[in-house]
Figure 1 (cartoon, rainbow, N blue to C red):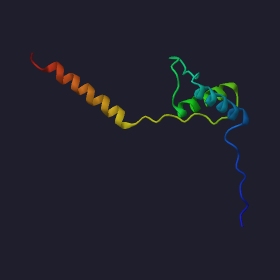
Figure 2 (cartoon, rainbow, N blue to C red; figure 1 turned 180 degrees about the horizontal axis):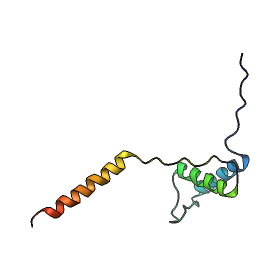
Figure 3 (cartoon, rainbow, N blue to C red; figure 1 turned 135 degrees about the horizontal axis):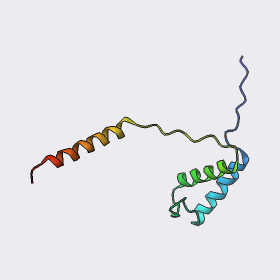
Figure 4 (tube, helix red, strand yellow; figure 1 turned 45 degrees about the vertical axis):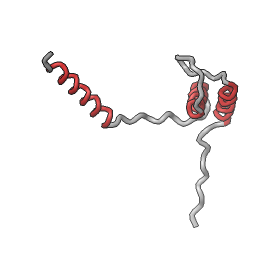
Length: 92
């Protein structure tokens, strides 16, 4: 039989503490988002804020996932540009 690999933890203890603190803030209603300073209601958004804070503090947190550009968005922009041209050519 093959030996099992030891799995490494993805997140450090400091990251866990940060998430716990931020979730507490969210429950109390004192957690605010970045620039807009609006109240955070979403659990997922609260976790994202916590991981971002932990990352900037130097805790062990995996790197953020890269956003993939989709073809649908660029196709939509081309259609919108085509519509604008069609509007200009109409007689009034």
